[in-house]
Length: 313
Image (cartoon, rainbow, N blue to C red):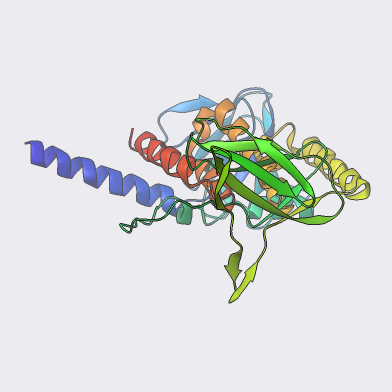
């Protein structure tokens, strides 16, 4: 019986991962007014309290005097969901089983582009195991952009016994030792693009330094860029446009920051959204994607295991 239980548990795990791995959102429900609910399985309905990402097989229903809008990921098309409607979410389309849904103005190129970032999540739900013993080394994001509102650098902590020196251009920051899995340091404004380096220190001595990465057969330095005033003003305008369409949706913001190489800002937005929206567990792999970009291997592996267990449950 014990062996049978283990086999059944393994089968359930593989099945749940296959479903989670192949699914990416079909669209996002937003501007919800009144009583709007969704179901994953046709039996248990939950109220939509904020923007909701929808997957193939979901259903949405609206109550009397209740409405919502929906953007389809692949096409950027917008739809109005009318009162007293029951909507089936298909692979790339939706259909009304009851009531009505009508086409609305299509999302702009920006919104469509943000939605299209939500694909291919399955590649971030599997860790390739290596049995080789590796030397202690520092790894970090290859390219990153900062701004006045988002001035933070992060990297994987190689051990609580190490402090660090972060050098960006001609400025060096002393970063104290800590026992967190992620080291976080605030960077001061600088001009344009600069090379950055990270050195782990122990007892006042340099132990290991971030090495150039190899790309297309060539070794390259890690670089950081600071948005100038004009670029930051442009970014703030785009943020207002996103908020006018989707409200205070930190997941859409995370997608936008990804497009700008603002990886720490993106990570923070995704984490905030997932914390505030525990029902959105299917969207967690997009946070994993950012962890991989930031080379946060420790927290990535730990949270991936937690996510797998939650998907089984």
